[in-house]
Length: 575
Ligand code: LR7
Ligand code: MN
Image (cartoon, rainbow, N blue to C red; front, side):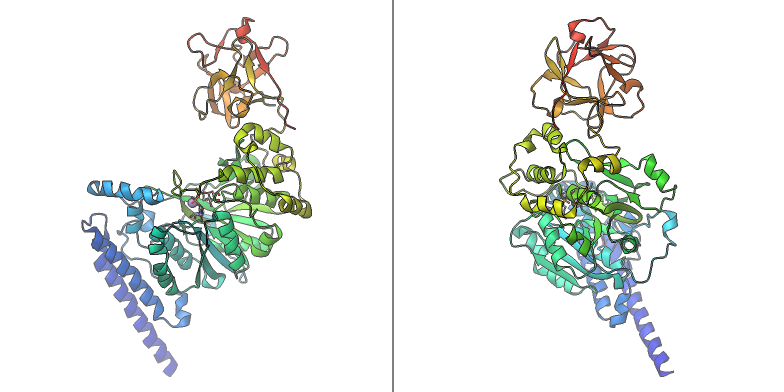
């Protein structure tokens, strides 16, 4: 009876603390709403709210710290349930000034509670899935250079609030030599703040700017968990995000898994979620791109929206991998600097060397997608080119020469010493890049069985078909042949398309020659080349020609055997 009395006392006092907290929220919330004129007061109120939440956590006995930090009860507060924050017209100018610091709406994110609520965005079947009791533990590693306070801490709180405590070994923050200005909030203030959190948070600072690749490797070296979970530093984890990731790795430690990445708006910080997961691929220039899950994979998944999606590549920032397996695979190439290319290196390595890569539909994490990078890159080499050069030299086999024709700038870059990475590939006994393209990424635009590939030269004007750096959706151009590859490379594919990467030459009703996204259905994107007459004939029966109207664009006309309708398709050599 004594014991139970004691329990009741603890329970009631806990309840009072909770009620206090709710009241506090209730009374402060009106000042932080979107209509609140006094902004400083609003910010103060938010700060008080968070401090209160932490106090609440700290007075709890050890076992009670397992309880979630309570989420704000006032759902009208800014950004709750992932709602957008709308900046008042009179604040717009200031908001635009702040926007430039991180290339996202700093005023908006600063108004949102650090433990804001989010909608449960998982497909229906996910909610009642049961995971084994003894899942591996994980260290969640966030890396950053100059991250904002509210994005970083909201990320941290979302991990703490939405992960089973027994699976979360720690959170590791790797500061990639943030600038002095950012250290005002990322320095002592951050240390003091995280010391109060109910989960071990370790901060490690790199002595000099290294870039996200070596920052992640530093995090991996410090990690105590069995699984490494990497996130960008401006993410928010949603309900149930962690168990399905760890559950999949527990089934097979050679699978690296990614959550479905939802969009947090860089303008309003609204949490937006798409319906279906997508797959990761890459174009001719090795730029990462998303594409819809193809039929072959839909069939394999038997229409079950909760089944993992096998993906050729990952976006790079958000994934989990068995720590020991990551090490066995040689982590990342430590010769990669600053930003870029590491996502493909790990993806290729996973597939070609015996592992695999999946998106897990039951795990959703939001990421703030930005339109441009806020960092200054240290002067010197073009880092992305150098990283891609190392990637190509080690992993692309003969396809590297194709890539160099597409990206002459990379071809000229010095990759530095590759001995260790080539030895690693040897040691891991990996399959070829051709195998990867054929078996793991058959949808790719890379040349696996093209008929001809090279420049398309007009015999009359000696100009070449040229993308003119335009995106799909625009007219194709004609430009003096320069023999440098790049934008003048076209492939006549086995589907009879004339394509440059994702763009296919397309003509509708005798109109202009457009570059449109390839649809693989023939029709307006179907062409044939006659080796004798040198004509390039469209499915409509018209022939590719120059045009009188504009010197820099082709047209289609009734075939007449004229020299302006004769084209040379020179097969370039690259393998
Ligand atoms: O020098 C740097 N040091 C760093 O620590 C530069 C960056 N960083 C940090 C940065 O603070 C951030 O946390 O690295 C992380 C990624 O940088 P972002 O947010 O500027 O990059 P991104 O989101 O535009 O880039 C994507 O591609 C990168 C290629 O190297 C990384 O793999 C990013 O992790 C990756 N982001 C994602 O996968 C999220 C989904 C985006 C998509 C598609
Ligand atoms: Mn990012």
